[in-house]
Image 1: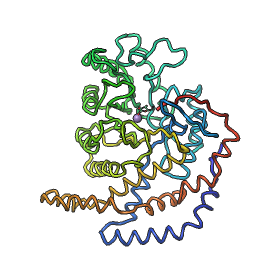
Image 2: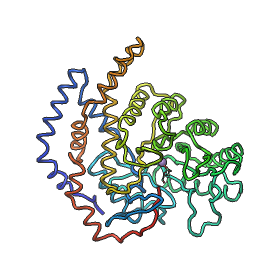
Image 3: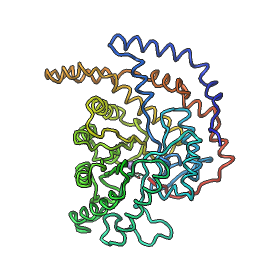
Image 4: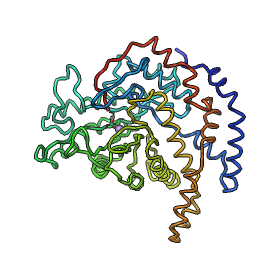
Length: 429
Ligand code: PSV
Ligand code: MN
């Protein structure tokens, strides 16, 4: 199996756009040079940045009310990989896929790894799933998984996570992301203290099965599906658990998993300060865990998060190497288009953060010059970095205008002829 799109198709998309892009890139380069910024250095950083795609994000998502499938959407991990390869071919920023089990179970993981490699893809963190029951599963997660009061349920959940590690080893991953939906809907339903004890105990058994060069990424979430309390509800619970588990345990920040208006960039800085910033699930939200496209609602927040990440890059603590992943639910768009748009938003936030005049910022902060500190960020934020992103993509063999190139490729229409239709019903968030 070759790559989904031909190189010629991308080249012929780029050809008529090159001249205008070069003009815009040169013009931005001159403007940045006047600010003492070398555009080529920023482009090189952007070109070296990548974000993993969620295997589940290539399917059409749903809300708990409904899912509206589109013709040609992928129905299994093989087709999901193909769609992720399209995103990678056009964006050149998404070379890895983060799989989710049991959704992506197959019989032959060595074969799956080869299949991905032939599509130009590798695998990122593996995600376990103990928030749903699967057909034929001996015990139910209705009342919790890693934190269940039933030792047999806890053992089953631990076993599943260890199985995910085993699969991940075959796929070449080096991290396990653990998110549990465990929690309560009623005060009095469970002991808030004892459920955390049970979590720590179960998590320690998973931790003990981690290979030496692996990380365990603990993903917190304030609410949903549990609406009164969640066991790992916030970054405080997450970092305490990670500290208790050991150095290979770090915290994963899903941008949608916080209380409204929480200062996420500050959380990022705090986690970094203690060497516990393990990774991200990028998405955007307005009200709760909306799983909307990255940067579509609050691009400024994304920029401020990346501002902290650039600070962290410049002042690395031990183990600073966050796993960057997208985690979105594409309910009303073609998932490939959403992932292209999101990758661009994420890279754009990074590029803008790279433009911050760090010397000016530090000097302003030192002198308590409030307005100039703010302006150091503002100047970078209002810069249109589109030409840098497009040039980096084009130089790497990607498309100057990725969504237009994707539409012109006719990929989805072709797949609508070839792939079996997916069922209706409520989708997964
Ligand atoms: C939970 O809301 C979450 O963010 C976790 O990362 C899950 O693995 C993912 O969404 C997929 O449902
Ligand atoms: Mn997530």
